[in-house]
Structure formats: C-alpha cells, structure tokens
Length: 111
Image 1: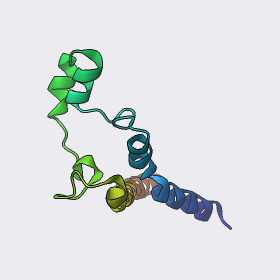
Image 2 (image 1 turned 45 degrees about the horizontal axis):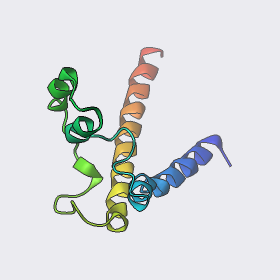
Image 3 (image 1 turned 60 degrees about the vertical axis):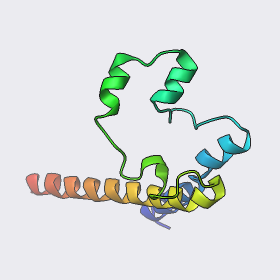
C-alpha cells in the first residue's frame, strides 16, 4: 500500500469521525465544541467580546454555517452528522484542489 493511499484512508477515517465534535459535547451537555464559539458564547464565558473579535467576525461567513444545510439548524446531533461529513468532504476537496493547483504552478516554474 502506497503512502498516498494510507494518507487518503486516514483522511477518510477522520471524515467519518468528524461528527464526534458535535455529538460528544451535546451528549455531555458541555455546550459548543472548544474553539467554535460565536460572539454570544464568548460574551457568556468572559463577560465581554474583544473589539478585534467583533470587527473581524463579519469578515468571513462560512459556506455551510454551523456545518449544516439551510433548514437543518436545531436538529439533533445524530441527524446533522451527515451535514458534518459533507462539510468535511467539501473542505478537504477544496484544500486538495488548491494544493494540487499550487503544486502544478510551482512544478512548471522549476522545469
């Protein structure tokens, strides 16, 4: 088995496991996953929202906000696991395509 094949198998396993970030915190009533806080969660945890966070929060809106499809917000974590997996596949596909294109450009420069 080639190293590339092992890499893709590992990535596939991580894709399938990605819903754990949604399921585990919900199961233990732990609130949102670590680091995935919006301004309201930061306000609740710290008592204020840093000005830089306020300013930069409007800069980027996720294509699949909340890792869910439109209309799927608020469903139970097991139902939205499918959307998590699709989000993971989409993100990895975008990164792979960009990395491939950058590699092609750099390879042409060194011919």
